[in-house]
Image (cartoon, rainbow over all chains, first blue to last red; front, side, top):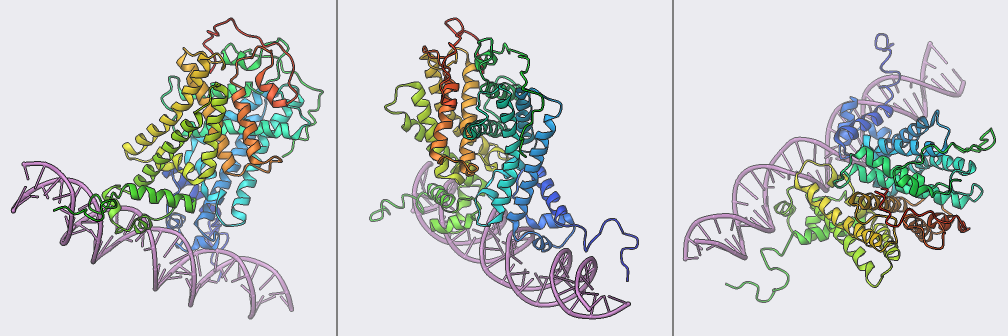
Length: 248
Length: 248
DNA sequence: ATTTAATGTTTACAACGGATACATCTTGGT
DNA sequence: ACCAAGATGTATCCGTTGTAAACATTAAAT
């Protein structure tokens, strides 16, 4: 007997598409509780299924958490990409990306911590850490691409053809941004200035540190550092296409 | 009646000094399992007491974890201080401290994560986060002192008399080191060079970034980074005092 | 020496993660 | 159109957990 005559929209399959529902519920719980200590049963309860149902989609609790973390990484990547639109200057691009990164972390500290937490990096499962580090790599790639772009544009003191140089630079920026995010999450120890401003200053400092010495002979880092902000240095742009190789 | 005639060392009190024993056990468990998901009962079991005994010393499990994290911070602080002995040059000092920091984190990733985990920064308890952030501040102070020392010695581009400048600088270094530690813990994405070397390169890069332009006119950061030694651009130096309200 | 507060034990309970067995639905081959 | 097979969800069970209450023991203060 046909059963979905009048309730056609909610249950396409057996129950609905659990899995997505479970991940979304977990996401909401992480956000609400700012912790991932909630019980799997609670997730099932909120999703309206029996407490055993989730095990059909995730072998164990950690796998749900890992899937949740992956969504976090996707949001991070997408957010950074969105932050890029309309900006051409590599340095401004980098600052925009980094600021978005930190803000996303501050928006949902528990999710951010989950992404870098023990659920994914340790563990015994074969694919759990793998899929997560893939997601992380994708986000990292956005950053590396911008750095390469800046390098090719001659703005950053990175040789575009030396992969190790680019790698190290990306790592250094990533480290600083990641650390800054964590510190911000943990409420930076009594600072005089507001958090936003502090983050801004620190980010500019980091990015300015990448600058190749500008033509006016002033060392980039110090210039920004003193707040005088060599504003605008008109972005020097390489030949048109930006042809980029831009990698994922 | 004297009771500690023949078992004088182990049981000064009722059972012994639990609390310390509990913290030590928790520490060992965190290290062994590389996770703090172990049960409080397991801790009690290993300490040789009933599963309810720990509650006489810690209101709930999170409090034990917090106390454990505090020990982690103390170790961090002590380790950094130990790394300082015998070194005079501020830059070498800073590098030594940072390397120790990263290594301690790598030695016991789970403990490191616990220190910056949700057990301490969120939570509702009043003193749990407080005591932990105090411990963190102590460790941070070591770093700040060295930076101030370098500033006073004229090695770092920080004005020793501007507290905000020193603060921002310390934050930037702390961010970079903290982020690097995390990244290293999570197994830095396929790097060509060995982890040790990578950490070393990155740390030197960070510390060199603080350098006040040395007399030979070489810009510290670029020189290190590109390895090519950017020869020349004579470093522009603001008038003597750097009075500059400096940067960070 | 007796009281008291600190410390540890026993017992109890609801909730949890996870396993096994079973029910139901979707689907794909015929 | 049918039916077997697999995917999905439910009911029940088990050992363990975090935590509470009541009770016991000991160290210290009086």
